[in-house]
Amino acid sequence: MVAADNLQKTPESSQFDLRAYLKERQKLCEDALDKAIPIRYPEKIYEAMRYSLLAGGKRLRPILCLASCEMMGGTIEIALATACALEMLHTMSLIHDDLPAMDNDDYRRGKLTNHKVYGEDIAILAGDGLLAYAFEYVVTHTQNVPLERVLQVIARLGRATGATGLVGGQVLDLESEGKTDISLETLNFIHNHKTAALLEACVVCGGILAGASSEDVQRLSRYSQNIGLAFQIIDDILDITATGEQLGKTAGKDQKAQKVTYPSLWGLQESKQKAQHLISDACAELEPFGEKALPLKELAHFITNRKH
Ligand code: GRG
Image (cartoon, rainbow, N blue to C red; front, top):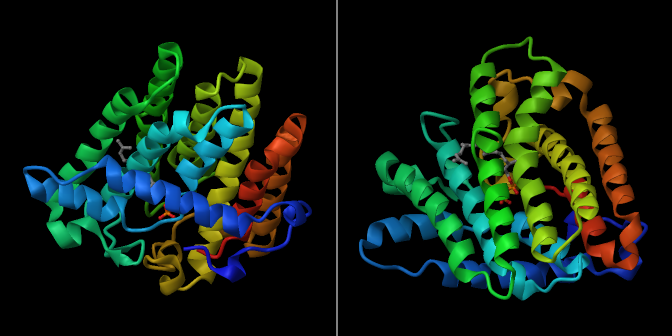
């Protein structure tokens, strides 16, 4: 999952073994997700939900949630249910995004897409099942956290996934298809909602569960909005520069669809520079947390250095 050539040296990397950290955290998340959805009757829907949920992926969202909780003085144990729920929400958005009515993709995470294996009807329901279960899972599996914080987390998850988040971003993205005069403002709106909103929920919810102050929650929010946009810029760059094998999905789709992307507005070099700037700004937000911020800072650098 984390190829050795994906990890480049950063100023902090001598103090922090990101490769070992990601390997350990990915395994922790995989095991927790595997346990979270056992197969029950009717088996088909659970199999379809598990097919995409356990199909690999970087697990960046749950890892960010756990790292943020720990930075703010909390434990893995109190954030694990929310971390799993965030990956369920992310996975459901990928299943629906790949549907013929949306992006119509055949491959995701190196495997056939959900609808290619189970059919469109079951893929829609698998996404719906994951969406509903994510909220149930936070409520039934979060332990040793005051209920007030759990309620705040649920509100954040709803806000990040609904029309104020992923759904809203996707609508504007669909409406922009085939248009070549999309402004930077519209492009930013799409990606602040489609990509950054869920990443923000990951980092902020981790902080809320640990009892972060509202000032610190705002810092976490600014950090994650910056990494969210940088993440999308890199995603657009990789669509041009990486192969389908590296990405685990069809490459070059944006150019083929003549989609307006960051590299189409700024070019590859400037896009890379802007992403790096955003990552520096994100890391600056974490200065007050000192050494405890190392994992979140290194994860931010991983976002710009990744090759898939
Ligand atoms: C949320 C109710 C609800 C519906 C879904 C389809 C849709 C609405 C939104 C689309 C959201 C979407 C697909 C955004 C793109 C985000 C993105 C850059 C995904 C790739 O993330 P990675 O690289 O993937 O972290 P892995 O596979 O590593 O997890």
